[in-house]
Length: 123
Length: 123
DNA sequence: CGCACCTGTCAAAGATTTCTGACACATCTG
DNA sequence: CAGATGTGTCAGAAATCTTTGACAGGTGCG
Image 1 (cartoon, rainbow over the protein chains, first blue to last red):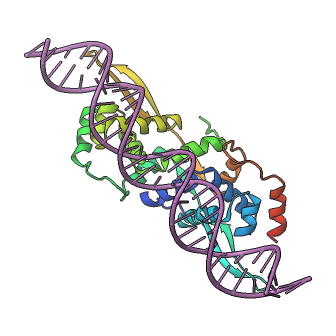
Image 2 (image 1 turned 30 degrees about the vertical axis):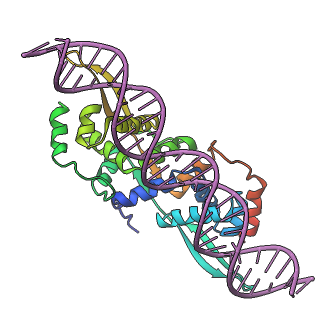
Image 3 (image 1 turned 120 degrees about the vertical axis):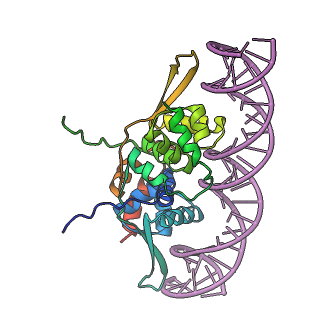
């Protein structure tokens, strides 16, 4: 089947992904879940971190679309939430970042005419 | 000339890069500098942000190896520091992250035997 | 000399993130 | 029923990051 070219991510999306991945704990979580899916409590024990904390990190990762969690019912009737990594792919280059930066909606905007000024002065 | 395969970044390196890029301001800075190099004061005016603040962001970006600054002497004798983006390239996939996560030296380590436990329980 | 431009640093305030302990609810097992 | 396991949430402390205003030093120009 034909490979689809990676669509250019929106600024806000890339921002969420980068800030989500830019944390040692969350990086390890991705690593752990890449080897095999797991449920919260077990994962917490595995990487040695409190449940509430892990819960928050997983939330951040899921919000960025890097992992997906599904609530499953075990045979013994216990409810457990399994997490697994989503197949993501991002390319980071000056060009990619520049492209994404153009569509950022967060904070500060007034930099229109200032842009032109910059080019003038940068000579 | 032959293309060199992208070397696997160390965990700490990737961590610095990601946290550096995971900020709207720094993303815009990269974007601005990608179009054309510029010196601090002008860049500050261009993207509408205080010099001290921009200075700190540039420091963070330079520390991550995403931009390089060179102190130059203008014709009129004024000293100015020009910044330009460094040609970086990072690929973000579950595999890449996992690879990098293995070489993180920051905080928390005790997760050796816990790893084995995780696989057992994840059945 | 006074003004305009450049460079840089510092300390303190503000805003976010990260982390912890305690709590509530549900099910199965001894 | 008590105890172990699972889920989730909340509030407050602790650690970081971001932001601002003031300051100091440099050069060239009228």
